[in-house]
Image: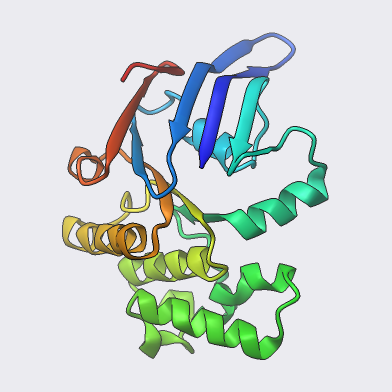
Length: 221
């Protein structure tokens, strides 16, 4: 589902050149749940952003579901991301002025969905994460765990084949973190969603099918 070949990412300023990723080659199978671990600054989030087509590598090739992406323009990349990929962030990235249902509908605004269809799909997504009774709440009326559930609902509302999760349990206590992990595991097992998760938590990582470790921008395991 995801194929990275000899990925390198270099950040340059006038005086400094930083090698963030060094010769990463990685295949993620359809339906796999992969976790990525490593110390802060090792390139985990950079790698996830490249997988998600939010950033381009300095060298190397990316294929998502057999589609080579380097020839796509910005609009084509945006459409491809919207169809294929769902994103979950550590800090939720919800819009506080919008109700929960409206936050979840957002990815569908970039499709030709009717308002009725958007509402139906968003409601279904919120039911999946156990928040059917919070449709009209605002984010500041929710706990951290509930906010992350909303973020997961937003990620899955367009029924993407791939979910990329950056520290999805990082801001939560262990009990709520386990609940969020259970939701992700059900999405993987029941819906066949391919999931790549960056985490600092060994316990969470060992619940996934496979663990990749990074150190100083290189894959060490």
